Image 1: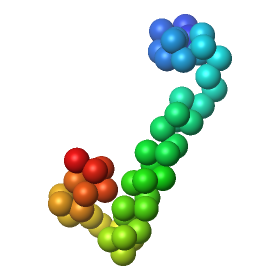
Image 2: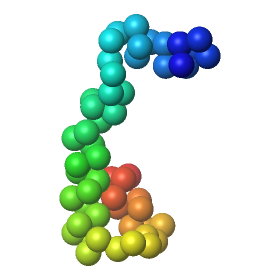
Image 3: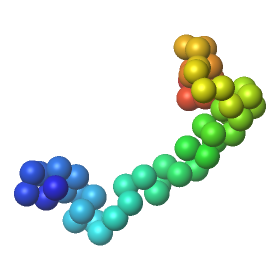
Length: 53
């Protein structure tokens, strides 16, 4: 990735998992999805609700 000039800032900081700082956001999204009954297919409104927008 470094030779392709991708994610260089993350690599140079020594961060191996770029998603770790967002884990709490993903956990909140999962909880919102669970309150909707964990549907496999989501409507536009459900997606917006899960994203918290």
